[in-house]
Structure formats: structure tokens, C-alpha cells
Length: 495
Ligand code: GLN
Image (cartoon, rainbow, N blue to C red; front, side, top):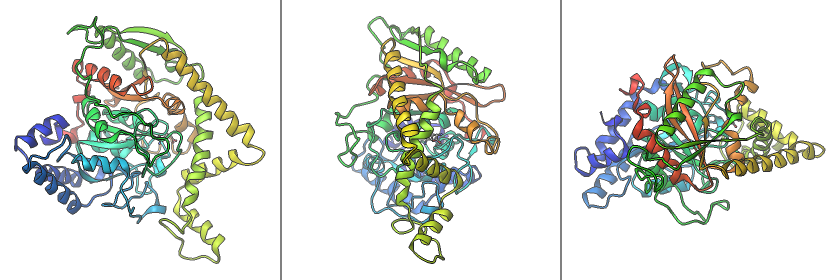
């Protein structure tokens, strides 16, 4: 089945002319149509996709194929595209067509990838369940009564259900890792500044980072190769040389390592704060069992501490809304997207356009953000949160001084039932407890499938690394995937 092959396997099929880019694109387009009820896509345009696929076939016929020529992917609808409208999951951008492609989109296009469409997401990437999309909730392909996680829920669902080979995602506080965990796929949030944010609609600019979502660490490495790199149009892009993220895959971790113990020399930090109250027993057990397997592969465990783990929730939920309230002020009914039909004057037009165009979660965060930035509260909330952010980042530096990576759960639970947490935002925010701190510190992190609950729901293992150590993270995840088969399990729809 074509939709069960990895990027490397599809590359071989394409290069050996076993399948054409057009056939491959058509296969995935048909699957997306057949499984439209999952609601993974906000927008598809088969004509646009097939034009790109024909161009890929043409390039291959002239021996001009790159790593991704003819490989079908899809973009989270937070990345602006010229070929498809971009909504950010919001009504306020319902018909918005960008005059340019986001850097990530342009780079994947240049590498030859074929775009299947735009993927569903929580409105402006605010959420942990993909229930806050103007275009409806995304279903989890493992159990369609459950959420796919968020905010990159469409990306996770589409990969897990075999509707695309890989997808782009964004992670401001966990939005690549948590949906990857909930759907049994692999995702990596790179170091802040590694991947350009140009053309990625801003939620919280100091936290937002784009990354790939796919079935395996190897596929993520191949996609990240095309996505990353300095971009002069993003002032926070890091001026570093490009890297080959596949270079360490299959390599021994150290000189002491062997065939049976490829990870000998790897020191894994285990923060007790990631295993305390609030963590579901099955998630804990499964995560610890995976870590034991890493020990069998040669790794040693080190106790580390991240004492401010719980404080990452209030810290994040002050800083992210503060930045969002500023970023979202541009949606005023004049410059982009939706404008109210009836209004009396300019003020009224702003008010009505924003009231009608934004959903509740977004409005709530704009209000929180405006409040914490306002005169009189700025010191008490925003400044205090910035101080805590600095301390949280320092905790990670102290912990990572004693180990190569930190491992723990991605989220305290498996995917919950649709609507289960909708009336209680605090419950939803608590789900982010193990993911937010990384974004506050700017560190890279992954989610790797490591087992299932007794009810058959996927569970991910989080691997956190040093700044710019993505190649290492991918190497470690790849070694685990060589020794386990969780990443090969498929929900019924993808079999
Ligand atoms: N759940 C978090 C939030 O709602 C993180 C979202 C994200 O990473 N985009 O802010």
C-alpha cells in the first residue's frame, strides 16, 4: 500500500518508475476524499496538486529530482500559500489568499514536494485538541469519538490516517509533540530560530517554531533538511550553516557503542517532576517501559530536576496571550480577511469585524493578553512571567549539564473524548504541563510513538535535547524505532 511507505521507500519507487508523482498524488487525493469525515483538511484543490505532481514527473524525467521530488505533503493552515487560501483555522481569514509563500512552503516546494492541501488546526494555533477550529473539530483516526490533539491536529490526523506522507506543523507550547503523541506518529519541534517563521501566521512570536510531522524519525529528518536554515526575512532566524539531519541515523552513539547497544554512552535525564501527580498511570508505565528499552540499547539514566515544571503553565499562559494580543491586532477588517457587513463608523467596523471574525478561545486570549500588558498589571503579570521564563530556561541548562537528553511523557493523558474538556479551559491548559517549558526555553523536543493504552490509544515519548541538537535527537529516536515497532502500527483506516 503506497500510503504505508516511508519517504525513502517512496523515493525509491519514484526513482525506479514503479509509480509516478501524479499516480502518487492521486492516490492520496482519493484517500483524503474517502476519509473526509476525519476533517483533517480545510482546503484541497486537486488541480493545483496535480499540476505540481506533473512538474515533479517532468523534473524526474530530466533527471533533476531532489530528495522530495514527487513526495506528497500537506501544510498546516498557519503557513501562507499562494496556491491555496490560508485561514489559520479562523473565520476572520476565511477567503484570504497570500501574495507570497511562507519560507517553509517555498523551501519544500523547491525541494520538489507536492502539496496535497491545507490542514485543519485550532484557530490561530490556540488549543490542545483541535476543537477550536472554525472549520470543525478533527477526529482521531484511532477512535473517531476522540480528539486528535492540537493545535496541529489536522497534520497529525492526516499523517496517522495515511492521507499524506508528511506534514508541516507548528509548536508554540506543544502543538507538534502532543498531537503526534495522540495519533501515534513522530514529530519534532526544532530549536527556536532553526526554521524560518516568515509567512507562518504569528501566535506568540517568541515561542512559535515550525517542524515536520511524519511516521518516522527518518522521514522527519528528510523533511527538516528541506525546511530549516537561515532566512534573512525572519529576524529571529539563526545564522547557522545548513545541516544534514540524516547524517547520524544508524550511526553508533559513541565509540563504546556496538551493534546490540548502539546507544551506549547516551545519558538520559529523568526529571522526577515529569512523573508526579496528574500523570495517568498507563502513560507513566508505558513511558517508563520505553525508557527501559533505551537502557537495553546501552543508555544510562541520570536523575535530574526541573523544579519549575508546574509554573510553566501560568508563565506560558501570560506570555503567549500577551504576544497574541499584539500579533492579532492586525486583523482589523481593513487589511486582511473578514469585514462585518453592517457598521456605523470605523470603531464600530473594527469591533464588529473582530467580534464576528474571531472565535471564543481567541477572544479570551486577546483579553487576557491585553489585561496582563496593561498599565498597572504589567509588572505583576507580564514582567513576573518573563522572570520565571528565565528561571525555567536556567533549570533546563542545569539539568542538561548532566545528561545528553531528557525523557518523559508528552502529555499527562491519552487523547480525550470530544467535548470532554471544552467547558473547563484550565483542564485543557493542564494538558500542556510537559510541553510548554521547552518553548519557554527555546529547546528542541520530539514525540516518538512508544506504546498504547489498554483502550488502544497511542502514547508518545518526549525526548528533549540541547540547543541545535536535532540531529542527535533524530539519531536517538531512529535507534529506538529500529528496535521497536510502535511507529509501524496503523489505525484501521490506514491499513
Ligand atoms: N496548547 C497550547 C496553547 O493553546 C499550545 C498551542 C501551540 O503549541 N500552538 O497555547
